[in-house]
Image (cartoon, rainbow, N blue to C red):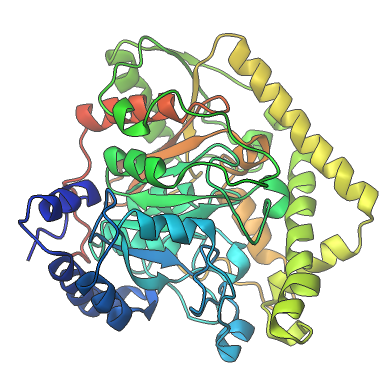
Length: 479
C-alpha cells in the first residue's frame, strides 16, 4: 500500500515509473474510505465498482493517470451518474445527470479515477456541510467541529488521507473555507478560468468557480494546468497564463508589496485572536522572505450595501434553481417541503425583488471589483487576510429552524467576511494552512492577487510551504 499521505503528483509518478498500478491506488483509496468514512461522513455515494473497472481498463495517459479522486455532490456532473446537489428531493428521485460537464471530462482525460461523491450543503448555500439529505460531515481534526462548506465533504476526504485531491467549487468561499477548516490548500481561480460548459455559461451571476482542494501547492498548480481553459461559446474567458502553473512552483516571485488586513470587511464580525495570530505569523514570515509587508485598510470593502447586494445575487441563483432549473430537470415543481427552511427563505428574497434591483446589485458588486483593481494599481501585489474569522465552529450552529429560517445566513456572515468579496470581484484567492491553534485546529490565511494572476499566488504559496511545511501534519482521524 502506498503512503496514504503522498500527494497526487507523487502517486502519479509511482504509476509512471511502474512502482504502482492504477488498480492498486484505487484499492488503497477504497480501503481508506471504508475505514474512515463511518467517522466522518465525507463520501456519501461510493463509486467503487465503476472505479475498479476504469482502473483496470485503458485510462487516458494524462498527468494523473490512475490517481483516485472524489467529486463534490454539486456541479461536475457526469452523464448517467447520480448527483443530488445536497437536496433531499434529488436524493429521493435518484436524479441522474443528463450531460458530462466539461470539468468532469477534463478530470477523466487527466487520468483521474473517481471513487465517489462527497457531501455538500443544500445547493452549496452554507459555509458548513450539514445537509438534511445526508447529515453532517465531521472535521478530522475534531469530529465535533464543522469542516466548513460548501466543499466540506471533499476537504474531510483529503485531510484524512482517503484521497490526495478532491473536486471543489466556490461561490462565496466554498473552496477556501473548508481548506482553512481542514488544513488544506484551496485555490479559487480567476472567474472563468475553468469552464462551466456545457450546462452553464456562469453560475450565480459569475460568482461560482471550480477547482479542487489539495494537500500541496504543487498539486493545486498541476490540477489547474490539467483543467483550465475556455470552451467555444463561453460567455467570457480568463486571461491566458504566461506558462504552465506547475512551472511557478519554486519560481522566484521577486520582492512583492503585500497589504495585510485582519479587520472583518464591513465590520460584520470581530476576528478571533487565533485568526489574527495566523495572519501576523504569516506576515512576519513573508517579510523574512524579502517581501514588503504593510498594514492596509481597503475602505471600499466596508461599503454597507455589499452584503445585501451579494445576498440578492446569490438568492436569485437559488430562486432560479428552485423555480426554473430543477423543475425542468425533475419534471415537477419544487415545493416548500422539498427543501430546507433557509433555501426557501433565500429564494423568497429574490422573488420579492424586481429585475432592476438584481441588476443594481450586480452593478454594486462590479463597483467593488473596480475598487480592488485600483487598490492593486496603487502599488500592492497581494492582499493577506484571514480566510475565516474564527476557528472551525461546532456542528449545529448553522441550523435554520422553520421559525427562524435565515438564522444560518446570519451565522455565516459572521464566519466568512473575508471570502465572498473575491467571488464578486472575480480575483484569484488561495487559502493556505500555515497555522494551528492551541486546540490543534487548523487556521488558514488567504492571499488575494489581481485578476488573472494565479501564477503569483502559486509562487508565493510555494515559498510559504517550503519555509513552514504543513503537509506532514496529521489529524486525529487519519489514514
